[in-house]
Image: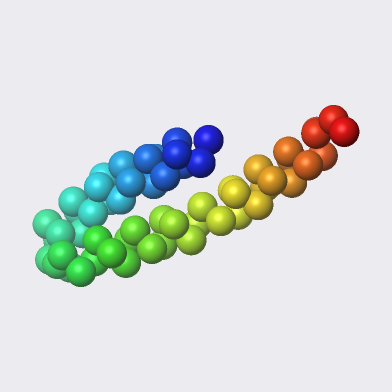
Length: 58
């Protein structure tokens, strides 16, 4: 699951980076977009851990 999330973030960075470059923000904007996407995944990660801990059978 972790690798899938990483790959999804990588694909989204490429998909959102192209318009940023073509609209004139430059190559540095790709790193900023990637950081925003990575940080936006943290709540999903926390939710995933919470759901896992609640449904885990001990």
